[in-house]
Amino acid sequence: MTATRSPFLAAFALPLALALSACGADAEEAGSLNGEPIAEVAAPEGQQWSDVVTVTGSDGYLLGNPDAPIKVMEFASLTCPACAAFAQDGADQLKEDYVNTGRVSFELRNQIHGPHDLMLAQLVRCGADETYHPLSDQVWKNLETVLGPVFERQEQFGQALALPEDQRFVAAAEVVGFYDFFAARGISEDQARSCLADFSAMTTIADNSTRQSDELGVTGTPTFFINGSKQEGVSGWQALEPLLQRAGAR
Image (cartoon, rainbow, N blue to C red; front, top):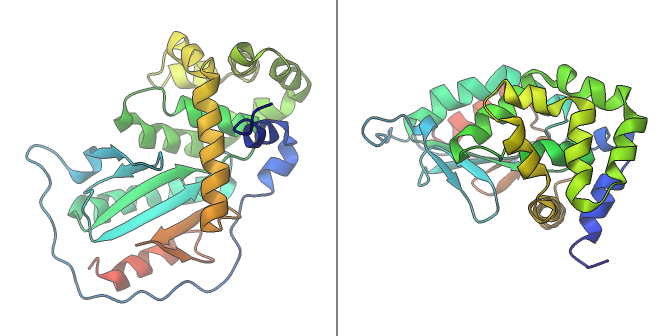
């Protein structure tokens, strides 16, 4: 077993119930942010800033103005109910009212909470870069539908994960109905199967999750950073929006 595979293998060996326990950040006071009001920045002609996606060197998907003076980064798990609540309650408003002004960019990175989470993180990357955020939101907004079969069919899911590297996630996705879910949202089954057979790409996602979480002290999701400053205890839109306004997005 190579050194690069050990965090990955640990991720897919994690029991499903324990995988969800990492959801929810520590409850501490948010960091202090104060700034003067910032002027809006025009988007490229014919676009809104929420149409612009840049894949960062950290494999984050940055939505909006890459040079925005206020940079929001969320570490999130696609299987985390608290992340789903943010997607349902605040993600649209963040994009429409803040990202589209050019004042704020929004980068999303994946923290992996088990094999099903890793599969979803790969599947939302299967299309064009611009589909990563919408597909992630679709997973969160339908989380009960997505996760139900995973827990109902744990034995079959585990058997699929025991298959050879290039087969295990392809088979596991069929067991839990991921192909139908993503096909209804523009990712064909053939496309999804090809993505899930790419063991190397999935190892990279898992290793990035482990390394970056350790480096940045991310112990739960969602965890938000504003201009590189970790905002402890901020998990919902009602707590995040005032921080953006204090930072100058007003």
